[in-house]
Every structure is written in C-alpha cells, then in structure tokens.
Image (tube, rainbow, N blue to C red):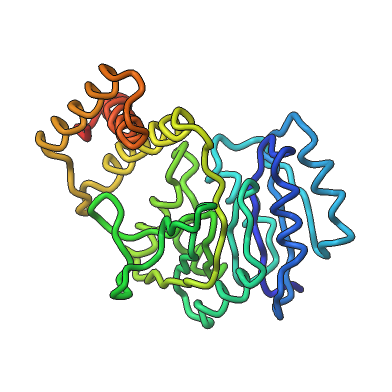
Length: 279
C-alpha cells in the first residue's frame, strides 16, 4: 500500500503533461507512492500519454473525473480513489523538482498540517515563498493559503476539512486552505518542495488569467466575509479604474498595468456575478 498519493488533475493536457510525468518518474524519494491522474473529460490524447508512463511510474493510474464541474471536484475524485495516508497535489502543466515529494512529506513530519511548497516561475522568481522573517504571507488581506500546484496534507485532515468546494471555478485551493486554518490546521512552509510553475507567455494571457483570479476573489469574499475577510474600499476601486483607463488609452500599456487591469476587471465581474461589493 502506498504511503503517499500524488494527485494530478488534467484536462486536454497532451501538450504539457509529459514534462510533469517525466519529473514524477525522476523523483528522488524514499516514500512508497502512487500517482493518480484525474482526467476531466479530455478530448485530446491526455489519457493515452499518461498510460504510456505506466512502466516508468509504478502505481500510476488514470481515473475518470468528467462528471464534476470544476478542478476542485477533479481533485476530490483523485482523493477519493487514493490509497495513501498523505496527499501531495501538483498540476499537469507544471514540473516538480526531484526532491519535491520528500520535502513536502518531511515538512509535515506526521502532523495534521497543510504544507505549502515553493512555487517558482521559470525566471526563478518566488510566487508563494515565505518572507525573510519566516512568516507566511496572507492572501487578500485575510489568511495564508497553499497553492495546489505544490500542496501536501494528511489524508485524514483533508477529509475532515471537507475536500475542495467544486462550486469554485478558480481558487478552490484558497477556500480549502482558509477552511483548514479556521478549523485549526496550521500552514507550514516547505521551501525545498519546489515546483516550476507554467505561466502564460503573453501579457494578454496573463491578464486573462488574472481576470479569472480576480473574479474568484469576489466568490471568496462572498464565502468568507463573515469569517473576517476584509472588503475593498473606494480608494482601491478608484486606483484600479485609473489603471484600466491608462491601459485603454495607451493601447500598449506597460505589461504590469495590463495585468493589474485584468485583476480589477475580474473583481468587477465577480462582484456582479456573486452579488457582493468587492471591486
């Protein structure tokens, strides 16, 4: 029986999942593990490619997760099929470091904690590392979270927290983390559990991604405002409107301005969709 279950959601990932599977096949680990790829209704060769790695990755399985709505539900399907006592989450379009798994498990040290790995872009810039003081930064001014592209948690603690909420199209990992923290599961950093995260190559792609994340922030606010997630003031809204206006006037505005405008537009859209004021 595997000690660890590595859980990977995938949807039409034929162009990228091979890199992640190569990395998982090359893990340097002392922990017996399985890899479960939950296929969210792919129409390309994702499942075929995954099955081609069975000889290189013992315990590799592909399961059907086409019946659920969003990626949180896909991860729940993988967790339901898992046999390990510790769950390690990563994504199909990223690449784990060879020491990723042992660092993730080691940081947990058998405790009911939520482990957050180091997420790096190709340039080496840290996306979610701890600060120099060792403090884990908060998200949206509320609580810290662990990104599911590099997350670990004991199976029992995962189930006790209720798994991921499949109603979230994005940021179900943030919602899960906040629920875990609020029920007494602390978040710990695993700075050596490195994942190299795939990011959109173009400014437009990054802005579209940030639009989706911004829209999800409004959904998080609707869910967690009664627990203390702060709202956004008029000055925040005015600053964002200014950024969007600058981007529109310049046409080819500075990339970071365009990305910020994506966040702002997403929060506005999310506020309308969720019927909350979180612009």
